[in-house]
Image 1: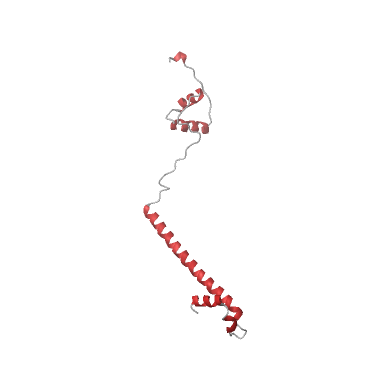
Image 2: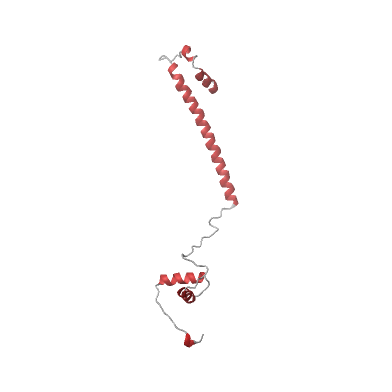
Length: 132
């Protein structure tokens, strides 16, 4: 094409619009002018970007193996502590339920009604489990 066949088109852009065109053209490895010309002619430009990409440092999401092992160890320690606490609570619950079951057999003077107490087999089994 020689100079006599070329036409020039100028248009005004805001700084934000120019920055967007500049970013898109850089991603497509074109100059802003070349990018605008291709877009105006309706040529398909690959890759097409509709939104500005955000660059995330991949190292931020990386957890070192040492930290991972420490986290796994800590997690196992917490699970053991949780299981131990749950077992202790279950033991205490059994004691409380057994004592609540024994209370009706205790007289006002502190003695136990052995005739009625001997009939409650569940209470006797629970007391044996607790070592009483």
